[in-house]
Image (cartoon, rainbow, N blue to C red; front, side, top):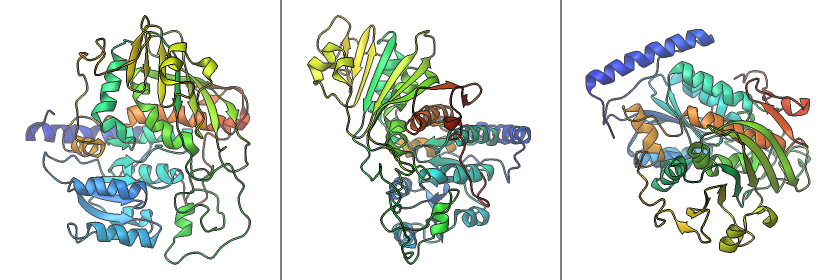
Length: 454
């Protein structure tokens, strides 16, 4: 990967800082400082908000890269202590917090912040960190609501920071190769995409339990609630991990997995704004949680093509309707094909294999004559976390920076809204609103409780 000289590094730093200050002035945001770039080989000063679950995985990745772990924050004291013990041998001065606001107020020498909280806190934490001049790595989905999504992009651009959403496949050779295959145009005009997941693997499709349980020692419940409306603590209902299916805290199976599974074809096919979103099949709906299983239909534009692309999302271990699948897909993979199938008029892509229009069989992209020798156009990287860290040290821009993660997450979140509101929802991307549903528009922006404003 191309490196920068010290002179170029200093010129980039100065230009980034000036651009950030100009952008911030235009948006009315007052930063504490401009973002900082490091030289090749320098270690990043990093802080982590959320140290359990994905937070633990992210901490392991950056710790393995030998970055300087300055501070850790978690609302669960037990998880926090475990994370401190994990890194203190190499980073003996690491500081621990249970309130991320206190951490950001005290830690003034940070280069980057990693946000691995429940979905509803991603925007608040990341935006606060960016306004403090920090580059941010944020778990998927990037945020919980469409308004937060667009605001994230505005702040990131104005602050001049690098960002990376935690859809880790973007750092693998295999996903980058899939993107190159799709960008080659071999599929021709794409009409339909079918994508399936076995998620949720956590409880959803249920009502809120009655009553309240005693708070466990060391749990900052107010910090867990954060921007969301206050509710009583119930053991084994929300924390840990079971928050994903609740509207107030998570985005269900689609929010959790679609930012992974849709990323390569969103980029590879150059998908643009959404036209409509509709949940066409669903298990029973509940007032506060996502359904246990759905089929969501999202129609989106593709750059350079008049005909839109229709994406069928299947969760809860459901599969595409066999009657909607092309005959040769069923012949090669069976009626209950999973994974991802992309249907074009010149070729089809199915789970890493390709079949041209005049072929009956699918062959892997590394073996098929039409794809095996297509040129490599994307750089290969050590991994997704390294990709983010190296950008701050003068490397290439991260592959899942906000220019990709914001529009991708918006598409996913519009599908999530359709899981809550019946009927076909018509989206006006320019206006940032639905044209035919006030109920759906009410879900675009979060209800943020006093004191936790984003």
